[in-house]
Image (cartoon, rainbow, N blue to C red; front, top):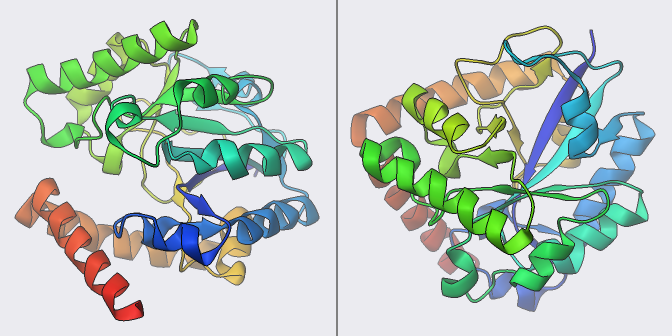
Length: 277
């Protein structure tokens, strides 16, 4: 059966200095430009059809039940947060292969984060085969917010992107994969038709995706080339192993809360970064 593997990337760096300048919490998800180019080569060698967002949308067979029908093994390439490397590295490398990317942008980062892409760069990420989507307004964890705060976070993100890009914003991903069923309904009301999370699985033909966000597979600095090949070819053992790890992570988040879990993640990332130095 055909499927679509939605790949989730973050920052891309080209040399050691650029890697060092990343925030510690970014480094576990950052990959080199050479690695990214190698990933695209592997997709091509495995005859994985890389879809741009418009092609992905065209694969939906029933909008009411959010069913998809892919005619062959496929992939959608997404990026979270709005790092300037999206424009500097991801966009031109994708274009070398004739591919398009879906870039989820956090508008508040543009004015508060030194490594964020500018509005001019983001506009270029919304041209040709490329598309921009939302990623919250401030990158706070939406699932941990009060209803009125999550409503603002979703609506303000869409309004800000729509105003600056002069186009409808129809897709988004939840920061940290944090959401609940009420947030899904709020996201729909805010104008988003395609809503992505971060639970690790492929999108299967004919499966209904109304009660939870569309799955994506996080690509990390630690993701080996062998693992990447397993990810894009829907290797059952890989996804079974990941589902066990995801369950453990979900349990920990429920015990200590999403925000404390993120604090723990940042602490570990900082310690690992200091050890490597």
